[in-house]
Image 1 (cartoon, rainbow, N blue to C red):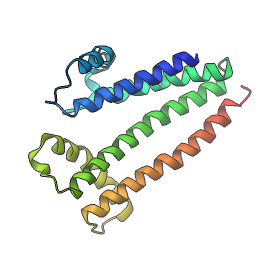
Image 2 (cartoon, helix red, strand yellow):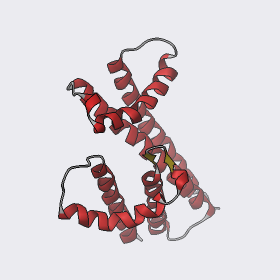
Image 3 (cartoon, one colour):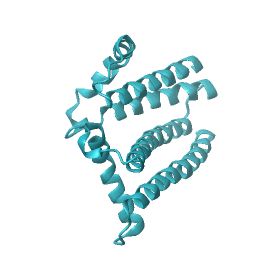
Image 4 (tube, rainbow, N blue to C red):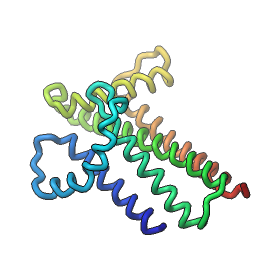
Length: 192
């Protein structure tokens, strides 16, 4: 089970690299990208066939694919650790899988906002590049919602909004991660 857990973790890393490389279309990675695509695309394509996982040009299927792999990874590591599955362990795994998907999404938005901050600070010509338009399309709704929650109707400059939003997402990941870890340990130790 430890080997299966390690293999699913490695496969998740390969899929993450593949997803990141799709952001840089036009770059020629040659044979390494072909090998990576051959390994990861069959799994990703299985999720891409579901239209409910698409919102406009935004494809959410890789996030769902990563969540499924994360759940499998949790099952394997839990079986390796406890040797059996009880109701408490099942509840702990479900909670952990939900948190894994949520933390991945929060981390994704944190990376996108980090990229947006870099673009803002380096004064890149962000409106003439497809990459920066995609980053803006993803980051603007997140910025808007976080600024609206934290600052209500007060005006905040763009740089402050990005930094506060990144800090908020990082705090959520760290604090909720601790709470979820405590809750999963508690559930896993229940004698159910």
